Image 1: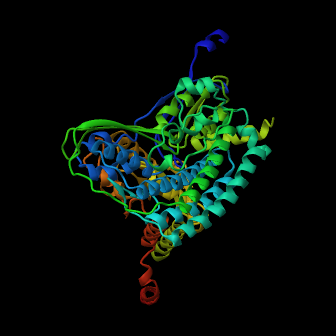
Image 2: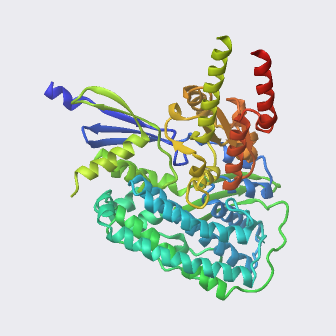
Image 3: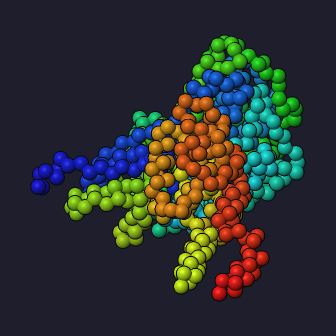
Length: 398
Length: 171
């Protein structure tokens, strides 16, 4: 029996439905008792066929379609698309419009990072932080609503400009909101780097070394937490980022704690950029004329979404609809590192590793655990797994 | 005797309905949406909107849930799972379709992998439009669904007298 056990594989299927998170995904986790020995992912449950649909809609309609690829980072998708189409058409966007795009993109980054902080804290069993960070997130949601008229899917972009403008009154409201958020962010930074109970779940867990992050092609905050200087805003500044340079945030350690710190420090950086924009917003037009048909050609467009590099390939054949639009989102780049990181860790760390990499995935409701010592198959829900992780660490304080 | 049995059964039903209205447990299912609606559902549970003050609690398992909150235009992979989850819920069950995609497929109408709305797969009790609906709209929609379960609230006052009269006649 002992020797036979070596060959047996115990597989935990997770996916594709989860109540608290969003995107459905399916994971198959192979375990040896407590330790994860292999992890496989199956994606595509939320595949809607958007890339094909772009070919049957015209250039303007596609803005609203690509905005709805992701409800969290909708603005950045539309920005990437518009930047690409404008380059194909050879149109120069007025500076005020470019700056307003950056302003909304940074507000969106604030909302996305605060959302992630809450979700990641929830997976660790720290629901107080979840509720506090989501309460504070409502401040930035109000600001976005004030600026654009909608909480989510702001539809700020047009081909050739933006459709919103801000006045002194709105700038003052944004400044007030940022002052409150900055104070809260400093508090959260203190919590995630000093709270002993929380550090037990994050410090030294899921360590991704610099070379691993490089090889696996990680992007965004995950790469920057492993000291890989990868940020499109810095490497290839687009839009108004040339006028408002970003200081890249790097942390060396590469564990979960580092990912918390990188994202929180990026919040502070976003506050700085927004304040600078409000102080020096260039005057001028908001839109410029765009042709209805885009001349033949192809282009790529790279932008920095809250989760990392977002890549668009756009090909035009000279008509009023695109011939091909290809999107590569940051989650797919980071998903490989989840699979790599999970191996060798306790099953109890799995929820945190998955959430720590990126919240834009969803795990499931039903987990079947087959323990080879007890030989009793049990069905676990995601809630059970999360609870198990919390209780495991209550009993095994290090 | 027959009247007593009838009365008891009615009272039990009334108590059940009262309990159901005052603490509905909800399950959230993403059938392939863009996350926008899902985030707004979560936002409705957090301190600013605090859905829990109506006794509404988010559950992880369909077997514990009374109300299914559905988002998304239902991708082909998820259609079968949506049907399975609906079947696992105990009776009586209610389905709320949240967001334009859940109502009609929304902006994804005509995509090759989209069924085009929750009602194409399972019966729906309440529709909340919006892209995405605000948390207030979600609260309002769920509240209206609960109010519709109440046994004719507007007729409650006069009808109680009627019942009294009828009971006298019967006795």
